[in-house]
Image (cartoon, rainbow, N blue to C red; front, side, top):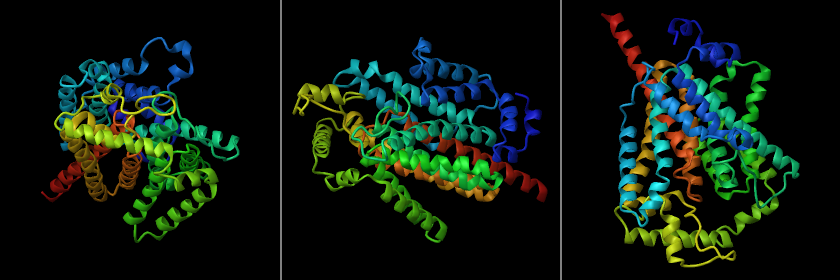
Length: 436
């Protein structure tokens, strides 16, 4: 990496989203950062699924291995010494132990690579994303690949006349192909995109502003298009959270109320009716039955649970009921029930601690951001908080513990915290030397 040349590109060029400057800076970045960005593209856009002709190797896994191998060559990479990182390690150890003592260990070990993938990605992201320029590029990439999904969701909604559809809308193939998972991604994407706009809009011209305004707008429409009550409830809670966090910010309160009114106006009537029957319709009844089963299984296996990824094997073994399609069991449809049923009470406690520590990390990031006078760090930390609130609420209605949502959110949060902490420490040292 040619650090001297990189310093010549001012951070304001990145804030203004000057494509040429960002490209020139990106060309000078390490191979590890390049591979990490390429991995995000293949994981979130899935060109290998869209174009089967190139689906000849496990692209995401191969690219991740390239990122790992080149990370050792990047002298700037350093493992984050962080309380959250310690919790990640403890959580992974619980996964391993639960796999060994699982109801069906073979089932656990057959999919253990998924958990390994996310833990590995966490440490890569928190080690490689260690400069403000890298962080901004990564957030921009994350928003753009999410925007690819949101504009597709908006177009699908518009084509059907903004009407209700039981199948909802889908995102990219893979993790986001179902409407529920797509809805969760949008609840993370919308607050982060709003934070990005508020932080940097003063650096943009009119055309660039209007382009970025499309991100949260298409995201909001996509949430309605998914017909996912969990995602729609989550984005409402995110709005309420923003109002509580900014009680003195009249613009924020007015903005949330305005968005809420627009959502209400575009919400199809049949979707509103689904909220009226929430808790009583067939889908709700089935979920409540599964949650009750999960809690019963916790009492039977409180320490290590059923075993990692053993929910369906154990449920199908008992076959307590069948639905109209003759299916014995579905997923838990609740991330917290899934976690405690498969990993036991210790697993749930560590997971909840990680969620709590993410809020704590963002709060500390804001302290460092004020010291640095960094508006970008400040607002992005609020956006990450908002996305976490959306993830926590929507996760109550769908099982996504080992989907990318949580793992990307926690990695980005820790990366920003460590970056702002280091810069604030460097600033303190400079001020101390001036006094000497």
